[in-house]
Length: 595
Image (cartoon, one colour):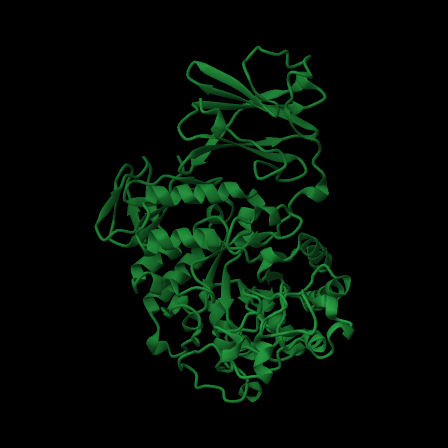
């Protein structure tokens, strides 16, 4: 038995409470190395009451197998250990290492035997996800490019709707435009909107905030936001705003005061400035990305002087009490408008203390608000229930690109990567992940697919049947294309003559399935792929769904279980034991008759 591969960490993604009386325990072992795993668990002060349970294999990645067990208890002062078996070899795995069976008297030897423990499940430590995330179907909107509902507030020199986007041009999209298109979104079926930043800023993308307490005047005002929230809620649609608290814009009043007055400015400690006076050539302050981020410019010298200096993005000092008070005051103000959550830009560069205070502020006003961080890597430190609920799931997005768009991995490798990602986080965090195929920071997924709508549809079928909250980038459902920023930020094409109506109907069907099938919302997941077909099963009580995806250019067969099945995407029935034929680049969502 490969002992080096065996891993369990208490109070982590390997051991966490689901509620005040339910506890999930995981164990990692070498792939194919263990035949049987048993969990021995009970009150750590009353070992005679301990019980033994068979752990079930959850899945495998490229190197490891993962086992799980959910333990329900009334006394949460837990002690536990594992019994691992591989043929004739059996070992005990404890916090003190590995022991041979019968090598210690577990009831008496408190020195030679040190079990794992979870001292107590405190209610406040349980990661409480919002009640609605399992049913959420998100739609991401870049407000400046979605719809121009009030031309009277558009910026000067607004370009004609539909022209080619550049890093600096404007088209006049606004909050009133989103209000006007709520019937479209309702008919599509989405029930949550993620809006990229709407607060006052100089750029078209608004990630360079100038005033956190004011809606950008080219988008509307506070009353427009309140109207949007209220009218969206009337249609069962929630609103999530984008908060940029890692950095501000160069036009931020407090930063401009430091530029003007140097060390004499009362805001000099609001930023990370290394010396005074503030210098732009070379930069002597920290900012987003490089020392100070300038959109599409290689050096400061390439840009005109004066106003263009405002396009830098100085990093905020979120350890400063005055900065905390200012930012959280703005957060409280906007949360009180009735919004349903926040997406947090560059979230992994902000200190954990700030995010804990942020969560207290938001949840103190709206206990059911969702908090989603932007983190493109392993976000486990932020997803323990004291900071974020989930993150933008770029890990799964990258694997989706490799499998669906680029054919660089097999169905087996794809499901192995998904297993690894699911094991990184608690179940509450997995349920709260924002699952995307593309965004304002990536090429359109159909472009990544080389223009193949079939590949896009397969990826969407996976996205809408996987664990987490599916999120569609505006216009994907009608076939909008676009390469990297700024091309992925085109204006929404409201000319229905140009829409891919078949693709849009496909999205509507996926959204309806997600909203009506409990197995897709809260069901268990099991991967069961073959060499050429990706497959996963979602099950909840009397619902059993089998998702099959053929991402090849050839006809493929998948053997069905010994039960009747109905394809919810293709409206076709299958007899027991009949193999299903999958056309090239096609998917099926089968509802299996429960035996």
